[in-house]
Length: 206
Image (cartoon, rainbow, N blue to C red; front, side, top):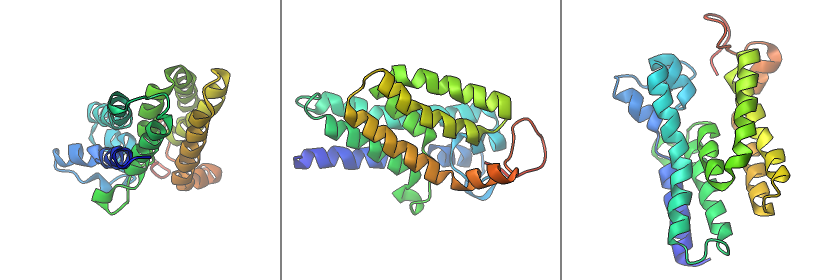
Protein backbone atom coordinates (compact mmCIF):
# COMPACT_ATOMS: atom_id res chain seq x y z
CA UNK A 1 0.00 0.00 0.00
CA UNK A 2 1.13 3.55 -0.67
CA UNK A 3 1.40 6.21 2.07
CA UNK A 4 -1.90 7.75 0.99
CA UNK A 5 -3.69 4.48 1.75
CA UNK A 6 -2.35 4.54 5.30
CA UNK A 7 -3.63 8.11 5.59
CA UNK A 8 -7.11 6.96 4.53
CA UNK A 9 -7.05 4.17 7.11
CA UNK A 10 -5.88 6.51 9.88
CA UNK A 11 -8.54 9.06 8.96
CA UNK A 12 -11.20 6.33 9.08
CA UNK A 13 -10.08 5.41 12.58
CA UNK A 14 -10.27 9.04 13.73
CA UNK A 15 -13.77 9.42 12.29
CA UNK A 16 -14.87 6.17 13.92
CA UNK A 17 -13.44 7.37 17.22
CA UNK A 18 -15.75 10.41 17.39
CA UNK A 19 -17.90 9.71 20.49
CA UNK A 20 -21.24 11.02 19.23
CA UNK A 21 -23.17 9.52 22.14
CA UNK A 22 -20.98 11.36 24.64
CA UNK A 23 -21.07 14.62 22.70
CA UNK A 24 -24.85 14.56 22.32
CA UNK A 25 -25.42 13.65 25.97
CA UNK A 26 -23.10 16.42 27.16
CA UNK A 27 -25.30 18.83 25.25
CA UNK A 28 -28.00 17.79 27.72
CA UNK A 29 -25.68 18.16 30.70
CA UNK A 30 -25.16 14.41 31.15
CA UNK A 31 -21.95 12.38 30.98
CA UNK A 32 -23.19 8.94 29.95
CA UNK A 33 -19.85 7.40 30.92
CA UNK A 34 -20.85 7.81 34.56
CA UNK A 35 -24.49 6.72 34.36
CA UNK A 36 -26.51 3.69 33.30
CA UNK A 37 -24.29 1.10 31.67
CA UNK A 38 -21.57 3.79 31.26
CA UNK A 39 -21.43 2.87 27.57
CA UNK A 40 -21.23 5.64 24.93
CA UNK A 41 -23.55 3.86 22.50
CA UNK A 42 -27.14 4.50 21.43
CA UNK A 43 -28.70 2.01 23.88
CA UNK A 44 -27.39 3.82 26.94
CA UNK A 45 -28.20 7.23 25.48
CA UNK A 46 -31.76 6.08 24.76
CA UNK A 47 -32.24 4.76 28.30
CA UNK A 48 -30.89 7.88 29.95
CA UNK A 49 -32.02 10.68 27.63
CA UNK A 50 -34.87 9.32 25.55
CA UNK A 51 -35.46 7.53 22.28
CA UNK A 52 -35.03 10.59 20.05
CA UNK A 53 -31.50 11.30 21.22
CA UNK A 54 -30.78 7.57 21.20
CA UNK A 55 -31.93 7.36 17.57
CA UNK A 56 -29.74 10.33 16.64
CA UNK A 57 -26.76 8.66 18.30
CA UNK A 58 -27.52 5.47 16.40
CA UNK A 59 -27.63 7.29 13.05
CA UNK A 60 -24.37 9.11 13.77
CA UNK A 61 -22.63 5.88 14.78
CA UNK A 62 -23.89 4.16 11.63
CA UNK A 63 -22.73 7.10 9.51
CA UNK A 64 -19.19 7.00 10.85
CA UNK A 65 -18.90 3.43 9.61
CA UNK A 66 -20.48 4.17 6.23
CA UNK A 67 -19.01 7.58 5.37
CA UNK A 68 -15.25 6.83 5.45
CA UNK A 69 -15.65 3.90 3.05
CA UNK A 70 -17.95 5.91 0.79
CA UNK A 71 -15.40 8.73 0.56
CA UNK A 72 -12.36 6.47 0.15
CA UNK A 73 -13.87 4.52 -2.75
CA UNK A 74 -14.20 7.83 -4.58
CA UNK A 75 -10.62 8.80 -3.87
CA UNK A 76 -8.99 5.53 -4.89
CA UNK A 77 -7.87 5.13 -8.49
CA UNK A 78 -9.40 1.66 -8.78
CA UNK A 79 -11.75 0.70 -5.94
CA UNK A 80 -11.93 -2.89 -7.20
CA UNK A 81 -8.19 -3.57 -6.98
CA UNK A 82 -7.89 -1.43 -3.82
CA UNK A 83 -10.56 -3.42 -1.99
CA UNK A 84 -8.10 -4.24 0.79
CA UNK A 85 -7.77 -0.54 1.58
CA UNK A 86 -11.54 -0.10 1.66
CA UNK A 87 -11.87 -3.12 3.97
CA UNK A 88 -9.16 -1.82 6.29
CA UNK A 89 -10.88 1.58 6.41
CA UNK A 90 -14.06 -0.17 7.54
CA UNK A 91 -12.19 -2.14 10.18
CA UNK A 92 -10.42 1.04 11.33
CA UNK A 93 -13.68 2.94 11.80
CA UNK A 94 -15.08 0.12 13.93
CA UNK A 95 -11.91 -0.09 16.01
CA UNK A 96 -12.07 3.69 16.40
CA UNK A 97 -15.53 3.40 17.92
CA UNK A 98 -14.46 0.56 20.19
CA UNK A 99 -11.12 2.07 21.20
CA UNK A 100 -11.33 5.84 20.66
CA UNK A 101 -8.10 7.77 21.12
CA UNK A 102 -10.13 10.75 22.33
CA UNK A 103 -11.42 8.79 25.34
CA UNK A 104 -8.36 6.88 26.41
CA UNK A 105 -9.31 3.95 24.14
CA UNK A 106 -12.47 3.20 26.16
CA UNK A 107 -15.37 3.20 23.72
CA UNK A 108 -18.49 1.44 22.55
CA UNK A 109 -19.25 -2.06 21.33
CA UNK A 110 -19.17 -1.45 17.60
CA UNK A 111 -22.58 -2.75 16.56
CA UNK A 112 -23.94 0.43 14.97
CA UNK A 113 -20.64 1.34 13.31
CA UNK A 114 -20.35 -2.22 12.02
CA UNK A 115 -23.86 -1.86 10.63
CA UNK A 116 -22.73 1.23 8.75
CA UNK A 117 -19.75 -0.62 7.30
CA UNK A 118 -21.85 -3.47 5.95
CA UNK A 119 -24.64 -1.19 4.77
CA UNK A 120 -22.00 0.13 2.41
CA UNK A 121 -20.31 -3.16 1.55
CA UNK A 122 -23.28 -5.54 1.30
CA UNK A 123 -26.68 -4.02 2.10
CA UNK A 124 -28.40 -7.23 1.05
CA UNK A 125 -26.65 -9.10 3.86
CA UNK A 126 -27.75 -6.50 6.41
CA UNK A 127 -31.49 -6.96 5.93
CA UNK A 128 -31.65 -10.44 7.53
CA UNK A 129 -29.43 -9.17 10.34
CA UNK A 130 -31.96 -6.45 11.12
CA UNK A 131 -34.74 -9.04 11.07
CA UNK A 132 -32.77 -11.22 13.51
CA UNK A 133 -32.19 -8.23 15.79
CA UNK A 134 -35.85 -7.21 15.87
CA UNK A 135 -37.01 -10.78 16.46
CA UNK A 136 -34.46 -11.47 19.21
CA UNK A 137 -35.14 -8.23 21.08
CA UNK A 138 -38.90 -8.56 20.63
CA UNK A 139 -38.97 -12.09 22.01
CA UNK A 140 -36.35 -11.78 24.75
CA UNK A 141 -36.25 -8.09 25.58
CA UNK A 142 -32.45 -8.18 25.55
CA UNK A 143 -30.78 -5.66 23.21
CA UNK A 144 -27.43 -7.31 23.83
CA UNK A 145 -28.72 -10.69 22.67
CA UNK A 146 -30.22 -9.11 19.57
CA UNK A 147 -26.91 -7.39 18.81
CA UNK A 148 -24.91 -10.59 19.26
CA UNK A 149 -27.18 -12.72 17.07
CA UNK A 150 -27.58 -10.00 14.42
CA UNK A 151 -23.82 -9.54 14.12
CA UNK A 152 -23.35 -13.27 13.72
CA UNK A 153 -26.03 -13.42 11.00
CA UNK A 154 -24.00 -11.22 8.65
CA UNK A 155 -21.60 -14.06 7.83
CA UNK A 156 -24.16 -16.53 6.39
CA UNK A 157 -25.73 -13.54 4.63
CA UNK A 158 -22.45 -12.77 2.88
CA UNK A 159 -21.93 -16.43 2.01
CA UNK A 160 -25.43 -16.69 0.56
CA UNK A 161 -24.81 -13.62 -1.61
CA UNK A 162 -21.43 -15.04 -2.68
CA UNK A 163 -19.58 -11.95 -1.61
CA UNK A 164 -15.77 -11.97 -2.01
CA UNK A 165 -13.64 -13.62 0.61
CA UNK A 166 -12.20 -10.34 1.91
CA UNK A 167 -15.68 -9.20 2.96
CA UNK A 168 -16.27 -12.49 4.78
CA UNK A 169 -12.88 -12.15 6.50
CA UNK A 170 -13.73 -8.58 7.54
CA UNK A 171 -17.12 -9.71 8.84
CA UNK A 172 -15.51 -12.51 10.85
CA UNK A 173 -13.11 -10.03 12.43
CA UNK A 174 -15.91 -7.59 13.23
CA UNK A 175 -18.11 -10.31 14.75
CA UNK A 176 -15.22 -11.52 16.90
CA UNK A 177 -14.57 -8.00 18.19
CA UNK A 178 -18.27 -7.32 18.86
CA UNK A 179 -18.62 -10.54 20.84
CA UNK A 180 -15.43 -9.77 22.77
CA UNK A 181 -16.75 -6.31 23.68
CA UNK A 182 -20.01 -7.91 24.85
CA UNK A 183 -18.36 -10.40 27.17
CA UNK A 184 -19.91 -8.86 30.30
CA UNK A 185 -23.34 -8.99 28.66
CA UNK A 186 -22.78 -12.63 27.74
CA UNK A 187 -21.91 -13.45 31.36
CA UNK A 188 -25.03 -11.64 32.61
CA UNK A 189 -27.21 -13.37 30.02
CA UNK A 190 -25.92 -16.75 31.17
CA UNK A 191 -26.49 -15.80 34.81
CA UNK A 192 -29.98 -14.37 34.16
CA UNK A 193 -28.95 -10.87 35.30
CA UNK A 194 -29.07 -8.98 32.00
CA UNK A 195 -31.24 -5.86 31.79
CA UNK A 196 -34.38 -6.42 29.70
CA UNK A 197 -36.32 -3.75 27.88
CA UNK A 198 -39.48 -5.60 28.92
CA UNK A 199 -38.85 -4.82 32.58
CA UNK A 200 -38.73 -1.48 34.30
CA UNK A 201 -36.64 -2.68 37.24
CA UNK A 202 -34.12 -5.33 38.17
CA UNK A 203 -31.04 -6.69 36.50
CA UNK A 204 -28.03 -4.80 35.23
CA UNK A 205 -27.79 -2.45 32.31
CA UNK A 206 -26.44 -3.58 28.94
